[in-house]
Amino acid sequence: MASTLRSVSHEDRLSLIEHLTELRTRLIICLAVFIACTAVCMWQNQRVLNILNRPLTTTQKKSSTDPIQVGARYDQLVAKFAGQTATINRRLAGTIEDPQLKQELLEQAKVADALVLAAPEIRPRRPVTLGVSEPFMQTLKVSAYAGLLISLPLILFQLYAFVLPAFSPSEKQVALPAMLAVPFLFIGGVVFGYYTVVPRAIYFLQNFNTDAFDVLVQAQPYYKFVLMLLIAMGLLFQIPVGIIALTRVGIVTTSQLSHNRRYAILAIAVLAMLLPGQDPITMGMMMAPMYVLFEASILFSWLLDRRAARAATRDLDSPEPVTTDQD
Image (cartoon, rainbow, N blue to C red; front, side):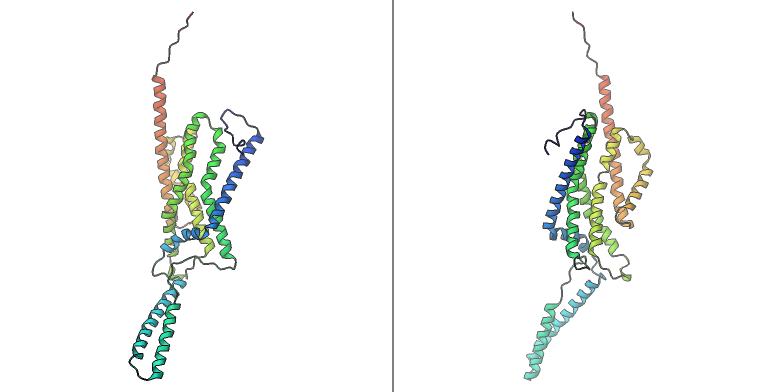
């Protein structure tokens, strides 16, 4: 495998078999990393599920109409009443001389104490499962999605490394830093999505028109929504890499991007509609960072253009060395 992933320069001309061999090796690396990450997530599945449940539990209103929450609050009120009743019965039993009535009061106090202990705690809302095998299958699917989420930065890195030899040495000066920035941009997108986009989207969706519905969150659509949204945010944060690559190669110019912002806004809106979560809150939370990244990419491309222009000016102004023929 080490010989297969040998360093390939721009001048090398590889055969189709050599290209396919390198591609196969990189795919094997990606698959191995994905399986390893999935295995780790399956091993730590309880921690992974707790992390994914956190946006749901922290965005729940105290006055939630979730049937489970309503039932738990009612049970707590009954338990509180039973505890007060047990205290009163014991006090009455201490003042009554009739042994039979005293015994009855103490028995009622014991029953009330048992009712207090049996009352369920009010816990934050968690996803529900409906099938016999759903807990196991959802744990396995979540581990696979989480493994893909963790391994995706390296998969993207392998993809860029495969196409990097196609760039000329001057293009590599931009392509290589961009390739190295891919994992960090992806991680930044996932973190931004987890702490900003996902909680606000869930808060809006799960607390919308709750008077008309018994709100129960099913595990399968919830985990799919959260993980797909996080993967989408990680990929969206690759916008600067794509724009800078296009401007450096010469497909588009910085001036063209600046003068066509309205089309970029339209494209961003359409892209946000196609991503998970078609509600206005989720779309707005995804459109905002995309537009900021677009503007930041234009600014960075403009700075690179100025740097290239200054370098070209220095080359023109520098006197060429004079050579003399000597006998």
